[in-house]
Each structure stands twice: as structure tokens, then as C-alpha cells.
Amino acid sequence: MTELSVARPPSALKQRLAALARRPQRSLALPACGIAIGLAVACFGLFRPASRPGTVVPPGYVALVNQKGVLMSDLISQTESETGAEFSDASPAERSRVLREMINEELLVQRGLALDLPETTTEVRDTMAAAVNAQVVAPLLAIAPSDAQLHAFYDTHRAKYTTGGTMTVHDLVLHVGGYQNADQSVAQAEEDAVEAVYQLRSGASIDYVMEHFGFVDSGRVDNTEELDFAAKIHLGAKLYQVAETLGDGEVSDPIVDTDGVHVLVMDQRELPSVADFSVARAQVYSDYRQAELQRATQENLAVLRSEAQILLAPGETE
Amino acid sequence: MLAAAAIALAGAAIAAADLRAHRERIEYRLLAVLPNEAAADPALVRFAVAQARPLFEQYCAACHGADMRGNTALGAPNLTDQVWLYGSGSVYDIERTVLYGIRSGQSKARNVTDMPAFGLRGVLTDAEIRDVVQYLLKLNRRPYDAEAAEEGHTLYYSTKGDCGDCHAGDARGDSDYGAPDLTVNVWDSGGDAQSLYDSIYFGRHRIMPAWLGTLSLEQIRALAVYIHTVSHPTATAAPAAGREG
Image 1 (cartoon, rainbow over the protein chains, first blue to last red):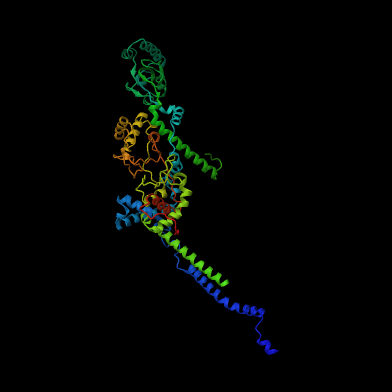
Image 2 (cartoon, each protein chain N blue to C red):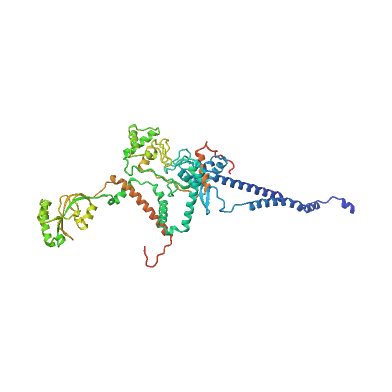
């Protein structure tokens, strides 16, 4: 019985148990291969020679200056600009020279930042402020104004387009109170001046009045045509205020000033006038653009201010 | 089963590593070569085109159109023709424009000059501008009024119009200034008579943003190669579909 039972083929259950018992030994070999390959790949990825950051110039750059890149595109542009030839035609020496210049510039800029030049140097601050404004207004410049916008701007800023008036005026004076040895009083001079004005308005000549009443030319104006602003400087504010109201051939009332009593005789007067839109057009266009740019920079400042923390010392205002 | 899975994983890891290495190599090469050399390398062109298409859609199509044919309302040029405002349309020229923009407010931007507003500023009258328009139509072999075109021709060369100062004596433009060629009938802001009138009357001061800082150098190079490829279909390897990178 025993022999017979030994020779009997194993039952299905036994076969499966035997297979399970053998299986771990075979399956360990294959996964081991897979793991080994995987580890090899991982090791290659982990331990392959890798450049340390900052020691290799990345593609697209021609140099690293303290980790700051100098663009190849900028080298091409700079070289072509300096040599006036295609980059490919530039000699190695020319390329090297331009690159050296660019590296030098980068070094100086970096040094400038290290020295905090924006904090200490007016020119750097001005340039930075201007560069920011340039970026702010750049999109605005792309929008052309319409005729209606220019007209509206002209209408609201007419005073800007006023042409300067001119005058040719005589300034006669009766000196008083010892001024240039004149010993008469102001009252006497005023009395004579009133009479002189009457004579002048009646048609008497300037020469006659000067000789008869003792007037002299004040010397403040040279009796030729002057722009209003120049006449104002020469006559002084007090006399100019009267002169600007006189028309052609008109004579002023006597005016008492520090040196005596004056009488103004207006030969010719051209009143200031507002230039017609068609005449002022170019200036209106320019002023409009300027005003728009100004508005944009102000709006940008308003945004910056709204986002900034600005503390003022006690008692300070801005 | 486990063994097969492990081998498959290892194989996939190897393949991924290889793909990544290949991609890194081609990315490196795209920037390492001189800009114009990239257009001559089919593998680089394929890679750049694949990279640039979604970028163009995201950053450029709003102005230049998804079909790259521009937008006259915005003055955005057609990028599929071979007419270029700045430079000759080389990869380098295109890349330069993408890097720093046009009148973007950056000092490296293309910004030598712009089209003055001859009408708004009162330099030319309405009638004079219409005469110049007729001359432009004549230059482009389009129907024109002969008498007006003759007047326009005179104005073009007069000190009043002085158009040749930027557009050159032969009206073929100057790509250093971004002054367009007036003889090829390509008009960024529209070529009908009214659009030409408006360009002269109101002037043109179109801008393009600088993309350096927003896009990486590699992305900008890819865009430049892509645009160059589209506008020079015979000069470079076609942007055919295939393995990307």
C-alpha cells in the first residue's frame, strides 16, 4: 500500500503547492534584473556629471558676469552697430572687443548698483524716473487724437495760443522833487501834465509839448515797436498797465511814478489776439500730446501712491 | 507578471530619460546656435514650431491673428508674407523685435521714428493728402487720378511732404527706420484710399510690447523660428507634424 501510494502521481493540490514553493525563487531573479536596471538608470540620472549653476554660460548668452548674462542677441546688435557690417562679417578681434566693452559696462552697472547709485546720484535717479515714465506713456502714444479732441483742447486752452501784442509808445516825464535836478513839486508837475495832456489830445506835437512844459523822454522805451512783454519790462508794471489800454494815437492821463509825472503817447498798438485753430494747429497737437502724457504719468503716480506706504514726520506736509 | 512589470517600468524609465535628454539637447541647441542658423536645421525648426504654436496663440494672436495674417485695425502686420518693417525678416531680426518690442518704452526697442501726423499738425491740407494718396495708388499700379497723382508726386519730394526722408527716394522704405516699402501694396493699417489718407492725416505710432521678461529666451527663439518658417516656407524645413524634439 505504501509503495503504491508513493508511485501515485501527486494530486492537483500538491502540484499547485509545489509550484508556489518554487515560484519565489524564479520571480526574484527577474525583478532583481529590473531593479538593477532601474537603479542603474537612476544612478546615471543622479550621479552623471552636472554643471554647477553659474559656472557654465547658458545657451543664448555669450557671457556671465557675476551670474548676470550678456545676451548673444545684444552682442550681435552691438557688433553690427559698431562695425556697420553684418555680424558674420565681423572679425574675431572685433567681436572680442565689443564683448569686452559689454562686459565692462555690465561690471560698471553692477558696481553702480552695489554703490546704490539710484539712492545717491541725481542723474541715475532722473534717468530711472524718465525710463519708468517712458514705459507708462508708450501705449498712449499709439493713440492718435481726433480733430474734435484737438478742437476741444484748443477751446479750453485758448490763452496758450494768444499771439503777443506790440506797441510803439512815447513815455514823457516831468521830473520832480530833485530828481535829475528838477525842483518842482509833484502837485505842480501834475498840474502842468494835465495841461500838456489836453494840448496833446488837441493835436499839439510831442516836440511842442516837451519844449513848452519841460517834459523829457524818460528813456525807458526807445519809441520803436516792442512786444508787450518787452514793453512791460521797460516801462515797469505801473506804466504798462496804463499803456496796454491805449489805442492808436491815444494819450494817457498823467501818471505819478517814483521819478516824476509821466504821460504816455501811443503811436501804434497791436492788441494780443488768439491764434486761429488752423494757425495754432501744430502747437495744439504738440500741447495735447504733452498734456496726455502728463496725465498718464500722474495717474501712474497715483497708482504707485495708492500701493505705497508713505509716512511723513510730524509737522511735515507734501 | 511582476517581473514583466518591472522590466516595462525600467524600459519606460529609460525611454523617458532618453526623451528628456534628447529634448534638453535640442533645447540647448536651439539657443546655442546663432539665430539665423536655427532656421536651417530641420530638427530645430520642428521643435521650435511645436513649442511656438501654443505660445503664439497665447501671446501673439490677439494682435496678429490666429492665422498670423495681421489686423489692419490695430496696424499689426501680416507675418505670413515676406514684407518686413524692421530688418529683412531673418530669425535674428524677428527675435530682436520680440525681445524688446517696437516703441515699447525700452531703450533697446525699435524706435527710430514714427509716421508723423501730417494732417493733424497742419503740415499738409486735406487736398494735399488726397494727392499723395493718389500718388501711392499709382506707385502700386492701382487705379488713380493722374493729375492728383502728379501733385502727390511733387509733394512726396517737396520739403513740405518730405516723404522720401524716411520712405526713401524710390519709395521702397527703410527697414532701419521701420519705414514701410510703399511700392509693394502691403499696408499694415489698410491699403484702401481712406486708410491711406488716415495714415497720413493722423500719423501712425504703432507699438509692440517687449516680451523679454515675460517669455523665456528659448520661447522667444522658438517664436522667431516659427514666424520665420511661416513667412519663408521654401527657405526652411516645413513645420510638418512629427516627433516634436
